[in-house]
Each structure stands twice: as structure tokens, then as C-alpha cells.
Length: 301
Image (tube, rainbow, N blue to C red):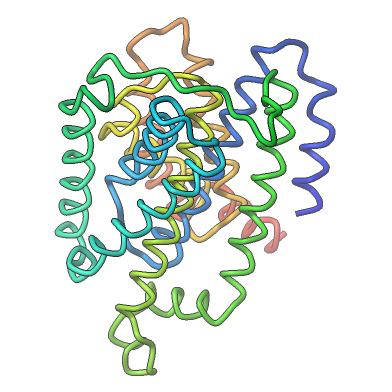
């Protein structure tokens, strides 16, 4: 945490213009999202290929409530988080009874349904063309400028890391690790596996919703593509590359995969190839992910 805080404090010294601030802000927002997803995938062992849908629901909740009904942004964000939490709880009961590729297909279907609804309900969402989102404001003061957004995103990232680390070090975290190791063994030991699977699914969905609201207000415009299958795969790839069951690996994975399109800007159309190659090579040579693999090598050294 201290190293991460030091990096956040020192990084503005090396950001020469608003473009670099924008990239770092997007890294921070993706990292917040991936930290929550890592709790579900890395610690509980429950795959989700539709989590971008929860991100989009949070974004559209903020866009619709603030833009059409004049809600304060913080109230719209809270309402989106509550609505997504309820939806995730309702969906988790039947979906998390599945395992393996059955679970992956069910979450994929969930994400596709959300994408179709956002695309078709044009009277609410603007359809495929998307909709504009008002600027974020609190107590009458509008949050604007890359530098202000940088510090807000950095503070929220530290909050997400603190929350995730406390969950992991609690009885809930121990139950999640037991569930990941062997669900049958965890049940024999007295762990209510259904309860903890639903709990972590709802928590990761609520974090996704909050991140979606932030992204919507920061960018000022949203389209249904934010809930696309590719975006969900991108988020899962961040978890895998950085390191499953590694909270700080989530930050590293988000940083690498968010910067990748910028690095490949001269090779239009090759982003998908690069994502696939990185995921494949990571699974072959670093199946635990970048951060856990490097940490293990340093311990042996």
C-alpha cells in the first residue's frame, strides 16, 4: 500500500500533458474494477464473462438519472450500485450453482442480454449511438480537469485496495480461498459456500457499477459497447495477466492492458491479436500471473 501510494503521489511529476493523465486515469479506473473482479475469479474461483454488463448498468444509471431526471451524481451512483447489487443477488442464486464452463456460459449469456437491452431500449439509452452524461459535481462544485480526476481516481483506487485487502484477511477471505481450493472440502469444514459465492459476486458487481458511474461522468459519453463481450474478456485478461489471487497484480494487469492499445496505435486492428497472444503466453509461461510469479522467484532468490 505504501509503495502504491508513493507511486500515485510521484507520478504527476512524469506526466507532461493531459493525454498521459487521461491514460493513467483510465488505468486507475480499470484497476478498481479488476480488483473487485479478482475477488470473484482469483480468490473464489468463480469465472465471470459478463462483468462488463454490471459496469455498463452503473454507467447508464448515472447517465439516465442525472441527465434525464436531474439527480445529483452521487445519489445516481448510489442508486446504480444498489440496483446492480440487487440484480446481482437475484442472478447469483441460480447462476452460481453452475460450475466450470457451464458457469462461464451462463455469465456470458447474462452479459449479452444486458448488451442487447442497452442497445434496443433507445428511448432510455440512446441506442447504439449512446448518450451524453453530465459532469460529476458534489455540493455544487463540478469536478473537471485531468489533474483533479487523477487525484480522485487515485484516492478511490487506494480505497478499493484497502477494502479488498481487508476482505482477504478476514474470515470471509479465508472462506473464499477454501472455496477456491475445494468446494466439497470447504462444505465439510462447515463453510456455507453458497452464501460466500453470492456475497463475493454481489460485492464485485457493486464495485463494477461504481466504476462504471465514474467512467461515465469522466468521459461524458457512453455507448452499449462498454458492456460488450470483448470488454468482459479484456477485464478477465487483466486479472489473469496481473495475477489471480493477487490484489496488486490487478493493478499491474490493468496498467499493462490499458496501455497496450496506445502502444499498438500504429498497428490498427492488431489489438485483439495482442490480447490473445498475451493471454496465451501468460497461461503457458506464467499460469499464476505476472506478480505472483515474480514474487515467487524473488523469494527463492
